[in-house]
Length: 82
Figure 1 (spheres, one colour):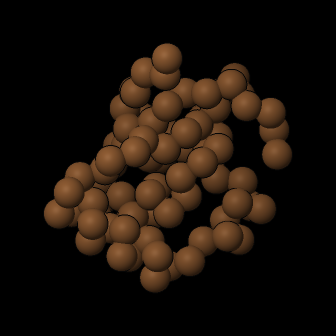
Figure 2 (spheres, helix red, strand yellow):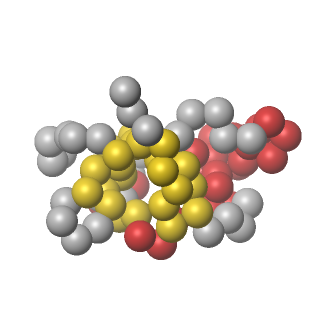
């Protein structure tokens, strides 16, 4: 079972290939939903020995950044490098 942990947003690296899939309008709409209802599903990150690398949840991460938050709930998963 995955456990949620709180991670500093500045400690999360987003790979360049993943950044290309960002749709700013989707992140903005999601930020409004998070403001009203909270973050329902934590993002997924893996730890590569030096930093956390985003696996899933780019739009949620960007939405939380847009809201000015400094931390986010995340699942630490074992995932292959993309």
